Image (cartoon, rainbow, N blue to C red):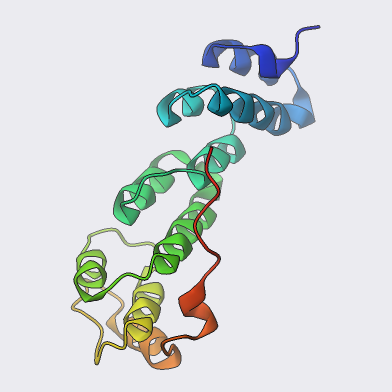
Length: 165
């Protein structure tokens, strides 16, 4: 039997892994790791995914620097893992030490993940801003995050940048 890591095309991986039953997500992730090491682009990696878990795995390794693009992609393709995907994107954004202008840009975005106002508030607290920037929704949660987060606190350090292929 052919090893999934040896398959070149996303369609081949999807076809083989779809027959793996309970092991489908593992099969797809194994192909994603091998394909990423060969230099396949993120879009092609996503094509090899037949499960939300695989799509989340790919997006979680994304090198996309714009958190709003990452959030939109999480919401559009990560399915049942969209919430976790958005949370990871926001944590990585926080780890990048956003400053006032970037915090205001993200705060003003129409994206509305449930955890976004609080995380924007944490970023504002880390940056020692005197108040949260204007937001379409969640200003009270933003202020709570800002008040409870001080520069140098654990929330400001974050998990560090994602490992990437």
